[in-house]
Length: 307
Image 1 (cartoon, rainbow, N blue to C red):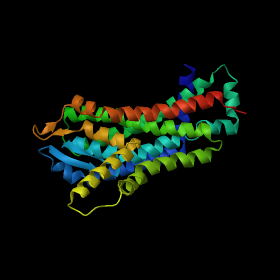
Image 2 (cartoon, helix red, strand yellow):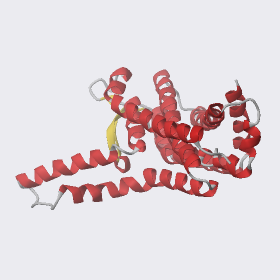
Image 3 (cartoon, helix red, strand yellow):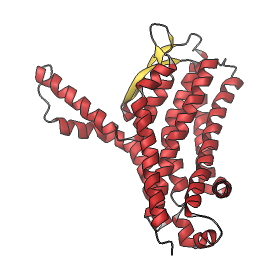
Image 4 (cartoon, rainbow, N blue to C red):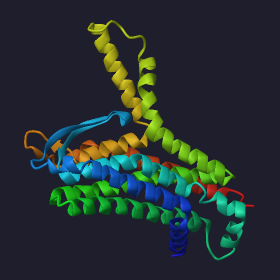
């Protein structure tokens, strides 16, 4: 109950903050611009079909069933790969050390409240903020299609809700990392820069350098068309997969594509259960990226000197 009270206070403070308002405004504005730019293309999707979707930046590709709603939601959630990471990173970066620096942590712990309730409440409150943000993006997407007179299908709405949950999980990963930095570093400004820098690096920069690193690790390129080149190409792709595997954005995008995966033979959605079973490793890695940093942050906060 006490952790929930702290969460509600954190939610209130975060929603009122300028950084949240700015990031939310940018997200909604870009989402509206993206939706408007696709308006003509959506009107042409009178006969949904399975299409190839490649996200080379994150090392993911697959077949998706392109309905107006699935197309919009896929673009929305993959766009949120960057915005969600930055938002999650910025919300938790000063959750702990700012309280310590200002001295309010002593006042807070002076009440009959335990440390675990403080850090759990901080995490839960910022999680509420992320849930609200993702919900706004989901509602804006559906509202735009309805205003535009685009018909919605029930399967796409349901799969969009599953994608919503996965997006929430993904944004919590960066919230977990940022709270860890907030417990490790004394200055809120430093933890903020590192948290946002990590989010930008993993979502915008890391994918660009993976191919260069993989090419270096695969060795010298043999002449094209030779058996040696085929072996080198397999080694190169293997290193690419290994390097992308340590990036939470890769696993998130893979899961989003799996949710909207299409079956070319049936020209419809692939069974959702089968798709997610195939992506079980991606889901497991996202959960690991979420729980491991928060576990370290929890131990650090519980054992640290707060003076």
